[in-house]
Image 1 (cartoon, helix red, strand yellow):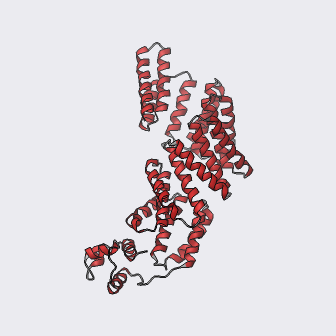
Image 2 (cartoon, helix red, strand yellow):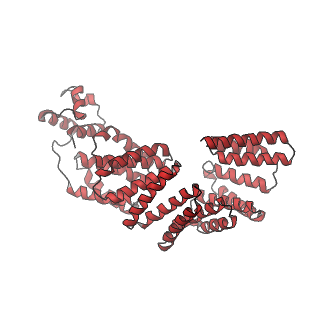
Image 3 (spheres, helix red, strand yellow):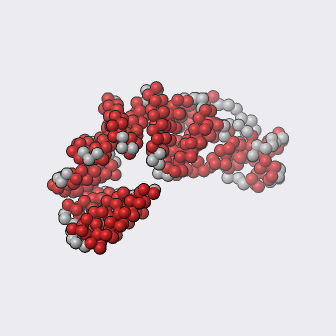
Length: 424
């Protein structure tokens, strides 16, 4: 890589202004042109710059580090935390002695993925932002990784619109990848597919996910294959292609059972519950939700509560009031035992309170709960489908009490929310 990139990197790393570095040895405009790789400095000036930056004048290739980077990258690609940590420790012991700009940039870029793997998102963001001024000088292989990891970061932050262009840009640099091409492509297409799915770009999502699935199958990465089948099931369910969705869910389940991926089994059962619930098959939906809840020790609190709410919804649909009350108590007890997360689980508490009011025949406070708490919450989060349900329920409640003016107002709220869904 170029001399100018090396100078800029170490100046930024040591937090030295360009004015201070240029002082007494050259002009700011000329040093800027060197950093931009528009000019190559004479040897004497380069020696002075390196001396001020306290870096060696000459750099040497380090084959050992290159091999370690290759191993580290493989572990990162497979989300292997244990071996990624071991590789990181080996590299960290050696990297301080290296002033080869390619080696140093590779290390910093891979650090982004490493931080993301361990959910250290702030550190990942700090490194991403530090490297922005250097991105145009990176070779295409590093641009590929850098853009892909930026996409990964925004995906994990739930900022899917911002993630998409980074994955799209990474695709442009994919051709430059020489090591582990198929695995790199599969990893990129999988994450890009996840993002497209979140953005409801279903056809593009399916294309990328099927490409990723084929590549993971070729390399026998069965864990990633189950993930692909699971997402394909979700997308086909959204498209109401229930037969295709069920096929992919069952493929995922077969793989998960045969390889004892218990966490995947739980997710598949939950998604099969959604699938049958959407088709109005409450008995089948409940059966799968209960199978998922049987492994509740594998679920995080949010997933436990969401599964309970789904069970409540289906029992309510088929009129099993006793079961609704049983699972309401289960959900409320779970939330009360985790009061420190009350803000994080506000949506789940609203859902439980909604069914609590209904199953108890609309006691005092129902109207204010719907109008002042539930509807404003879902409107603020653009969850208009829930607004439609809540407003229609309130409208039916008013109609049963012959309060037709209030009923009309509630149905108008439902219609307004429905229009927003159509025009979203």
